[in-house]
Amino acid sequence: MFMANNGKVVLAYSGGLDTSVCIRYLQKLHKMDVITVTVDCGQDDDFKEIERRAKLIGAVKHVYVDAKEEFARDYVIPSIKANGLYQGKYPLATALARPLIAAKTVQVADKEGAAAIAHGCTGKGNDQIRFDVTMRALNPNLKIIAPVRDMNLTRDVEIKYAKEQEIPISTEAKKYSIDINLWGRAVEGGNIEDADFEPPEEAFQFIDFKNDKAGYLELEFDEGTPVAADGKNMQITDLIQYVNDKAGSHGVGIVDHIEDRVVGIKSREVYEAPAAVSIIEAHKDLEKMVLTKHELAFKRIVDEQWSWLCYAGLWQDPLRSDLDRFIDATQTRVSGKVRLKMQRGSLRVVGRQSRYSLYKNDLATYAAGSTFDQSLAKGFVELWGLQSIIANSVVDAASKNSSKKRR
Ligand code: ARG
Image (tube, rainbow, N blue to C red; front, side):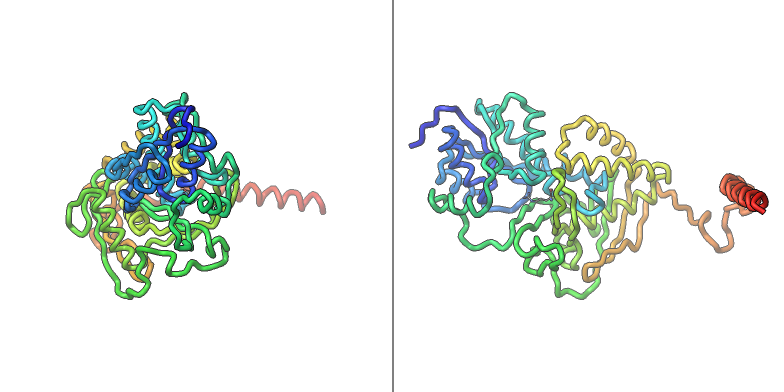
């Protein structure tokens, strides 16, 4: 038995290599009783097996938290409303889940009267920031221990330690390191660390590479929230799964880009997020129909800032909830339907409708019956271009003047 004289530590436990090794380090080096917490954000793991493993390695207690609904309601839906894409591409799946996992872990620590809280993040990524900042914001009295970061551990060292310590880790040589939840899947490591190497089909789980047929998906939004798919009302978690399967079956949802981590590293990131990619595309399109161009221009800035806060671990910053209030105010008119066409990985909006539409056919039409009075345009155009026209003539006059002088 281990001497646990330094009290309890609550570890955010995924069941993977990093956090499994952490259990033993926390016991042996920190001499603490380890309580593991696994937060279910829709990763579809074998949670019984994870609990069994935690206890086998030495956890004195294991807590499973089903947070799927909460994740969808309080994290994914706000992100849809914010068109949450970091650097215009990454749908933030991992970034959204971390503050929730951190919050649940703090809750358990408070309940258990723990002295410390722990996570398995490395010192190279964004997750350490998301965990630390959220944990400290929620309970600054808890000490945070991050064994992998503290000891500068690499995967090879961890595997060696696991073997020495007889820590059960999945023996199948995993080609990639995967982080997955309801909103998407991040694939890392192995051959795709070469930024010029095309991710092979086996890196993906939802994408059907053989289906050539085109398919349609109709999404209905109510105040910015998706409420129905293909005419069926669904709970948000079911809807996301439905869209994920359908869009994935048409090859939609792979994101492959170069990303700037908060710590300055540029990384090649590969994601698979059919639901996120198609829902955000549809949501953006509907916003274009119902919001004014002034709202759209400003909201684009807000969306980008919102995505950055989420990515950079500042979920708890008051600015995020301030921005949410603005975003929610814009969403009261974002209700309607969007029809998407998908084929072999391409995604295109082919139709949209809303009772709040600002698109008026009688104004836009080139056919007879237009209510737009063209005679009003002449004066408008004159004033619209006034400064640009004057600026050109001033420059012209000045250059003629100076060439005269030189003669
Ligand atoms: N680059 C993404 C992010 O920072 C995904 C990282 C996923 N990997 C991980 N080990 N959590 O959110």
